[in-house]
Image (tube, rainbow, N blue to C red; front, side, top):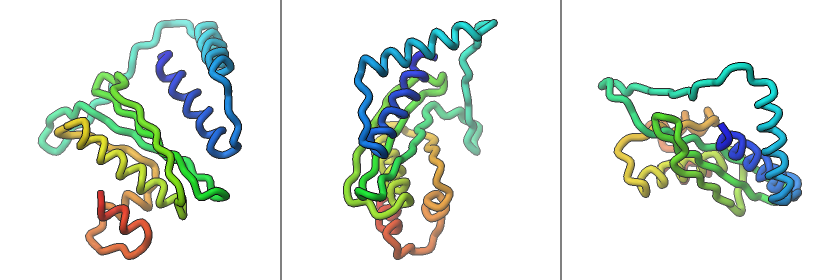
Length: 160
């Protein structure tokens, strides 16, 4: 639980930096985390069990790794940041990766880069099977399409 809080507040801090150029000192971030945990402990009446999510593929074999990706886009400066979170089937954090991108033309391109980073991470970790989850329907549809996409996204998607 504490790991999730840390990830959420760190991600929030990163978004503030990308969008507002506002940095949060480490001490303030640590204080925020402690305050939030105390607040949660005060409202908790019973101990919560960790949630485990198992997804079955078509053969019925339980997959062991989920990679979630998301991205933030700064249109004014044509920059973006993408983040990847890798968890095993017991929802234990296995890897966390953030990447800064320069000269990005659109939020769709950012999501495509994040998806490409997820694929590269699967390969570099030597994972035989992984579920990759993102939130850009446009990019996912273009990845699944058999038609050649001649847009900026197409060049990134061809690498995927």
